[in-house]
Image 1 (tube, rainbow, N blue to C red):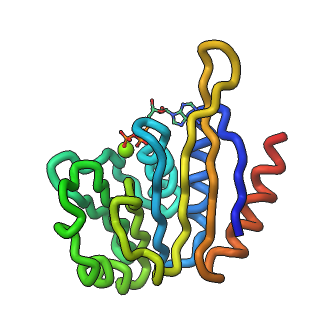
Image 2 (image 1 turned 90 degrees about the vertical axis):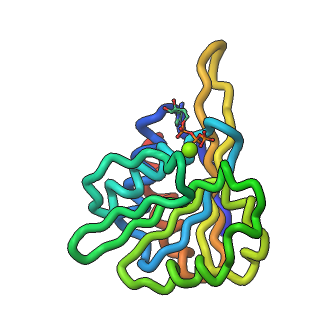
Length: 164
Ligand SMILES: Nc1ncnc2c1ncn2[C@@H]1O[C@H](COP(=O)(O)OP(=O)(O)OP(=O)(O)O)[C@@H](O)[C@H]1O
Ligand SMILES: [Mg+2]
């Protein structure tokens, strides 16, 4: 299932991340793609907030991964932008993260990983969307691979319908 809608402002990006962080079944695997500066980190901030993580999320600069935790939850934020060689990330490592209970794994620039085909996941893609001269919003495309995220997408659609 695939849904696409417009995020007219930063707040919309945060809100949709927040909504998904609250209602996604965990453990969750969320793959973020889209050109430079389209909103992947902003969405991840909202996602962490909705999941109950109080820390301020910024992209890991010198590492590929940041981990945030509460007493009983884990939030793993990967940013693969600086990944020179996709072989640096071994997929069995990813499996270790995905096996943890009560966790969300969110990966920016997930398209740098090959071999994601076998993974049940939610793909989130951002695009620039010119709204009026000098004003640019975003499109977001949510695509569920496998059945796990289907009902979430239905709820997201209902939530977004309340915006208009
Ligand atoms: N829906 C939106 N409309 C307009 N601006 C937005 C929207 N969502 C996010 N932004 C803005 O886009 C800019 C880039 O956002 P962000 O850092 O989240 O992108 P990114 O995809 O993570 O970038 P990078 O590719 O560098 O990792 C920020 O200034 C943010 O406030
Ligand atoms: Mg980013």
